[in-house]
Length: 90
Image (cartoon, rainbow, N blue to C red; front, side, top):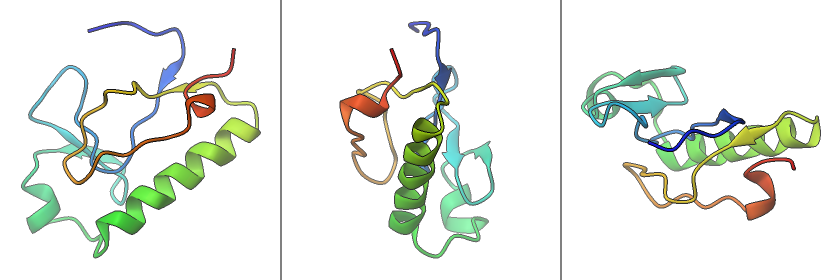
């Protein structure tokens, strides 16, 4: 696993970098097994949750927070792409 100097940002549905059995739930703000999304997650619309994560990321970036999300991050719902400029402030 590559180490980055910037804080890792997870989008709803992203796989944990060091534990492939865990996925980030933006609605619950926790890592859980993939079954969480079908059984326990209160989020009725996972696509909307991903968009909310992206909006939050952009707001944090504009506020000067330095974040990182690998361009090859695995997501259990869809491939989520964020513009390169949002990966980290240089």
